Image (tube, rainbow, N blue to C red; front, side, top):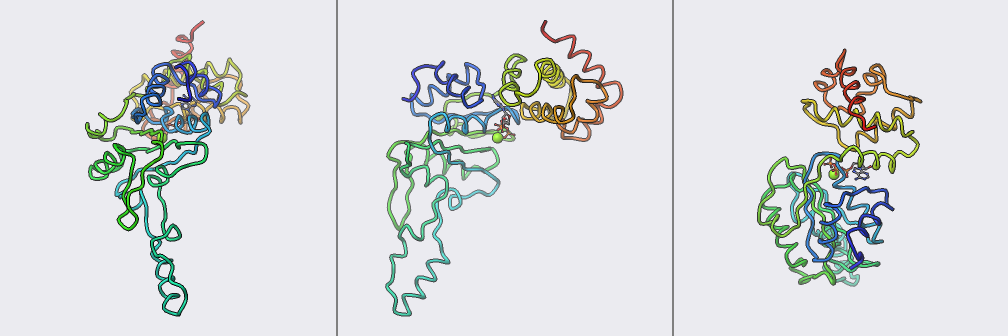
Length: 294
Ligand SMILES: Nc1ncnc2c1ncn2[C@@H]1O[C@H](COP(=O)(O)OP(=O)(O)OP(=O)(O)O)[C@@H](O)[C@H]1O
Ligand SMILES: [Mg+2]
C-alpha cells in the first residue's frame, strides 16, 4: 500500500498540483487499500480525468488510458492481431522463408486493457477507463468481467492474468446511467464543483501567475455563474482557462466589458453567452463581489 493515510493521499496529489477534498482522497485511499476500482461521476471539467494522471505520477506508475466512445468493442479495447503483418509473413513463408509463429508477440497489438494486465516497470499501472457512459451495455458487460478477475483470454494464446491488479479509475459524465452491476464492483464518488476556497487553491496550483485579488474575482464570478440557469455550467477547467486568458490580456480586475469580451473562455454555448450580454454580466459581477468572503 503506497499511502499510509488519507492525508498522505491528499499531500501526494497536491505535489502533482491536484487539489483533492477529503471525501475524494478517502475514496482513492480505500480503492488502493482494498484493490477496488474507483468510479467517478460528475460534471464536466471537475477533475475526474486529471486525478488518474496525478495519481499515476504520484505513484510513479504508468498511466494506461482507455478512452470510451460509442461502438467501442473488445477488439479495440483488448487486443488485435496485426493481420497485414501476418499476411506478409505467410507470403514470405511460401517463398521458402522460415514461417514464424503467426500468433507470437510480433503480431499481437496490445490495446489498453491487455496492456494493463501485462507486467509494467514500476508496478501495476493506473488504468483510466474514461467516459464510460459513452459506450454501450454490451461493452459494459464485457468490462465487468475483465475487471472482476483482471484477466483476458486470447484464444490463440490462452489467458493472460495481471501479476498485480491495475489501479482502475472509471469516469462518467452521466449522460446515461451506468449499470448497477458495474457500479457495485467499484467505490463510487460524485465529483462536484469545488467550494470557493478549494477552487482558489486549484487556481493557485494551476495558474500561479494570477494575483490573489484577480483570482478571487475570477473564482467568485464563476461560482456565481454556476448558480445561474445556464445550459452548461463552467467547470474548473474553464476557470483556469479564463484566468490564463485574462492574464494574457494583462487584466488586473474584472469589469463587465472584460467579461463580455472573454466569455468564450467560460461559456461554450451561444445561448448562455447571449444571456450574459448587456447588464447581466454586471449584475452577476456585483453579486459575486458581494458574496466574496472578507
Ligand atoms: N481538483 C483539481 N486540482 C487541480 N486541477 C484541477 C482539479 N480539477 C480540475 N482541474 C483542472 O481542470 C482540468 C480539467 O479537468 P478534467 O479534464 O480532469 O475534467 P473532467 O472531470 O475529466 O471533465 P470531462 O467530464 O469534461 O472529461 C484539468 O486539466 C486540471 O487542469
Ligand atoms: Mg474527463
